[in-house]
Length: 447
Image 1 (spheres, rainbow, N blue to C red):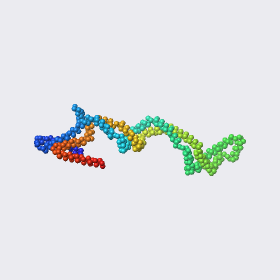
Image 2 (tube, rainbow, N blue to C red):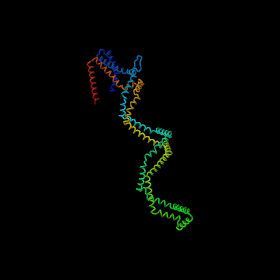
Image 3 (tube, rainbow, N blue to C red):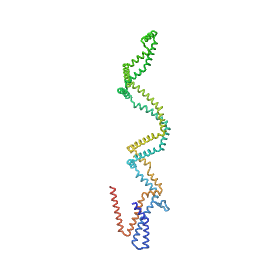
Image 4 (spheres, one colour):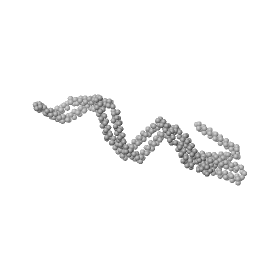
């Protein structure tokens, strides 16, 4: 259709005027009084008048661009303000309805698409060396400038949360019985071997018998020296007669320690001691003591954390940020944050809360944007040549068709001057074609 219209335009602009001149010369000079030439001339004249009438009318939409001495100006340049006003109001009221825009955003997943595009863009940007260095520099600069605040925040967190967290999550009423149960289970499963422990204790005592016997002998001598003279002499004679000295004490201790009775007694005492420990742990007094020690330990631990842990943590973070290889860790963190943000934003975008918020915010956004004013201002600031070019690019083919139809209708009217029957037949044929086109179009619309 576009090619056919272009061919007709060339015909009516150049061929038809030349044919009109040629026919005029032939009918007036070469072959006067020839009716066929007269008919052809009249039809050509009507066609040229019809075509150029529409051609001039279309040109007068844009020409003259500036107002002339006789106050003439093209329709569109002259009514540019009215056109801008009409376009602004029409576009704002018909193309930017809040409900339509909200439905379009929801149905076409515009927000989800924007989230994906933003994440892809950021993921690509953080691969650039320039961006990586900028992020590292910014983090290091921000960390150094806010290190004092960070220290204060960590201190406050430690004071208000650390010890309270442990206290809230450790219940001594359940922990202490659990602890005694662990001891009992380990004894039953031989993870704590009382026999082996008793043997170890006996072996340790045996290895220290020389030292123990020496201490016993010295204590006995000190006791003897504290007695009266007669008692002292009697005890010394008795010890000499019975051959009681340091070696005798050591030998006697060896005999006791190596005896089965002593081994069994150690085992019994060990078992009794463990039972007393578990009983004490389960008692109110034991729980109270453990709780007091635990609270003191928490205070000490919190103090150590404040004095040494927090400064070490701050120093460690700063040293990591200064390392050339720190970007690998930061990149993992950035990617994790991007993935987390993407998932959270997508979940938010499909939630009912977001839809309600979007429907509430869209009218306010449109009011703030003021689409009507934007379009008006844009049309007003357009140069007349730009406006003409824009309109012709959008409607040029249709305007060309109007020009061609003017030429065709002019030719048909020229026929009517000589043959009314043929004119009526042509008009009837055109009406029938128009009706057929309308019927077919209606059926296509229904289907």
